[in-house]
Image: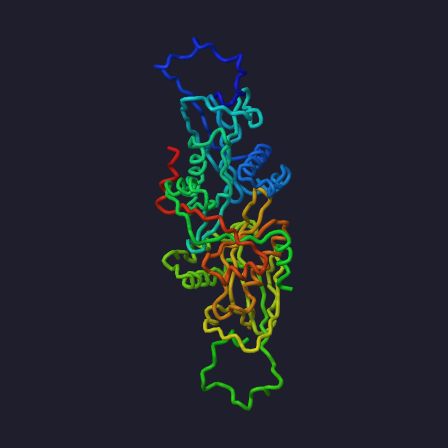
Length: 235
Length: 235
């Protein structure tokens, strides 16, 4: 995949005569896989979360470290607590996992794009399976929540993030539907997440996929000094 | 506690001469305890959730059964997944638990009220420790969530409910602060929940306790047929 390698310097551009004739477009296949994240993925996860904080202009709230992520993730079997799906991309079919999780069969899908995906950060997000370079393109972090009215669990999606150069290609939908599929498989009743009320594009996208945006509920958060103080409200 | 027994019929009312003199008010002590719920509490939990649905005029969304609750709760150690604290009330000191959880030391507090609490449903919410009647007055259900920006978990409070006859006495605050205390104990960064935007009294209450109400976030929910359909978005 073109996206998996740094863009060639101008001097390496192919001669015009080497380009395929316009009447026979070849296309650029992108092989993708959604798999469970594992502890060795933490450096990628940390970088992805930081990019998300930059995108949301919330870096002042970002204090996660690789160490804090490592100590809090992967403590429970997948889907029973905090769970991460990673999106992998490659220009070639992605080799099977050497140690697949019994809890989840990776989801694979092949895309074909008219132009190559140009990934300026491919080196920073590369994994090698043998000689084959595979790129981490995004992630979704989710965990069980519980509806007392339904009397059963659902999944709450805390983060869904696709790196900038891979957006508007259907990868976000692929990650979110993987969560929906897992929810149905487990007999769960809901998948929920939050959206900013001014993000009209996102709201339209979610409504088109069949989600309901609840207009009346507001999130309350107790944190920092107020949390410290309130713990002693009983004393 | 008067609340623990059905109100006496008028014929059983004490003679006026038996009442204490008005100059020496005695008060009505209420001994309370917050403890972890256990599987045998499910019938109480089911009734409490149903009362909550009635209060919120959402019984059309209520489909939980004792069976569904039993099959989905108590599957993980306390605090690692869905966790319930119950509020117990009694007119006498509550006996210690025979099998206390190593994960949580019950929180006890004694209140003193000017008038007895009248509980018309005390029979339906009674537990007996030996001969001593103890009343289930409310519950809070919560579970871990995760902040990727903080790189650590928090608690999400799904439900906080105090039965009608025990409201506006500080019991809700007692339940919520027990969750805050547990969050701090575990090094968690946040406690979060949701509130309806028209519930001004609740919002004022939460803001006074130091919580922030986030104005811009909206909950998105994918459920029912739309969830079933979306799981196949990758195909």
